[in-house]
Image (cartoon, rainbow, N blue to C red; front, side, top):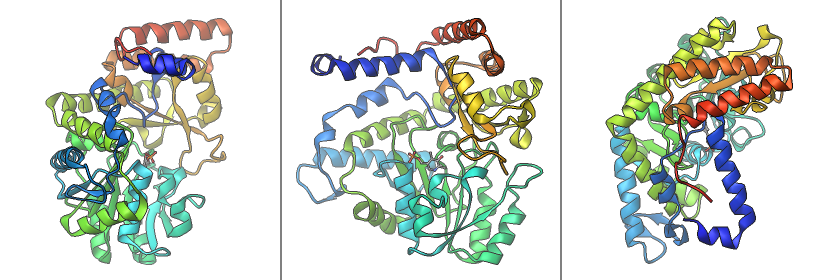
Length: 415
Ligand SMILES: *Cc1c(COP(=O)(O)O)cnc(C)c1O
């Protein structure tokens, strides 16, 4: 495969090969990344890329959509079944566009949204001042409990009653505990406003029943399809039937033009995979692996925000180690371990430096690693963060490579 690419553009072809090798030969512990199946990757690389299909199945603004309609319909059906949802829109290009479309559907510019700030585990699109969200809407923020590092539903309710937001938003990019959907649904119901949930990170765990479902507690759910859900890069909105028309109109023509039909085909493949018993087992193993990793980090003397994890990610507070997130991230990159620096609640460092590391298990669990490999990986991380000499870094890199080689990735694929 890929002969045409190789001969037409050897430069890009070899850059892609190098990226594939980087993914194969390193420990991928970035909590938002994953390795979709070859079936998903193949589905994305198809001539549906060529089609314009503004609109929805049965009501398009272009001709020739009979097969595109079949694919998008199948994709929507599978999404609804997977998440037990009344309606699905599979067109958002990514999680950010899904959130934009959801806000546009539920609110007028200038209205008030209750959410949590980026440094406490929220997302750019949850009200950062430099993001479209913070520029178009009036965000008010609740805080994590500073003692426990957890969401305190009573404090959220107090803030909600004082601020009277027009939308209550529950969703996080760096929260290692169960998301309290019911509490947020109850708070929104008490105020008589919609409840929106963003499960971008945990969608795969929700699909597998390893994390509680946001339904029936909330009205609109947004997610990415490429994190724990292990699909193509993309977005998805699920909602109650009563919001279906508003959501669809908001995605197209409100926010986007033509959908990425080739990606929608790949989303359909991913949703099929995610409905299997094998995927449920995978999701259970993600959480087991994260718990083992958290326990091992504690043994090595690291502080963890909230003390541990219930899901796929761990937030390490590096302050007691005299290190910053930036330093740790760079030290680990030098030994082929990928993590990302992350703010911790009330971080004394600016976001570019940060005092925390976010570590996640979805990608390594996809490669087949289990508890014993997680202990080994954690020990390599620990050594990598304190390695001084080039020879020690060399020996860590060799161990990382050996571990990776025992769990092949995309066998047979080459550019
Ligand atoms: C990753 C993420 C998004 C956005 O995803 P993109 O596909 O990168 O636009 C939105 N919300 C949350 C909570 C996320 O973690």
